[in-house]
Image 1 (cartoon, rainbow, N blue to C red):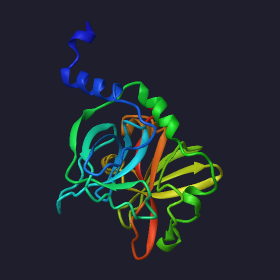
Image 2: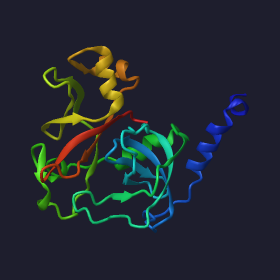
Image 3: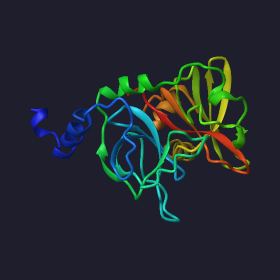
Image 4: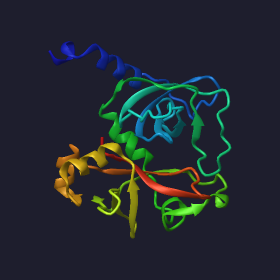
Length: 239
């Protein structure tokens, strides 16, 4: 009975995602349409999994001044690639430019997400993004390393609130490193504000977020005063 009562919009999204033709690589033809599953979004860039190739891509979206991104994890979005993809940023080799605001088609939370996320997890290969510390000079990047890492934490994650500046941070362990990153995940930030706690971890964090965070989505920023900074742009469940 549940099958026949399912919302037609939900069924349409499920069919779109699960019947998407599979490609070995991302189609980067200027002006073409790309369908993505949002993993994390800020006004600087939106990290999606290209549904056709199951590859991580960063979208530069032309948000109007004063408009904040309203995209959240597991949104299904349709975007048209710009004529000039601007693929010359050596610090962000996965980044492409979207011609206009993407269209949100709905959300997808099918069981397949669990395997997709597991396939995207970043393996241990030295420190996060190839360097220790919070940032690295822009001129040191050569386009050889990705600017997105989906981390399955060894310990944590833990959310912390700094009262001196009101910022939210994510702390987690990853292959022996104790990693602290500024948090840009809007849902996580609002969770900390709502609880008025200085820190959240374990069951308290899972209860407050509404899910148990299994992955930390980390990204590198555009250069700020000549340096690219690490940040957390999403806390994600296992699926």
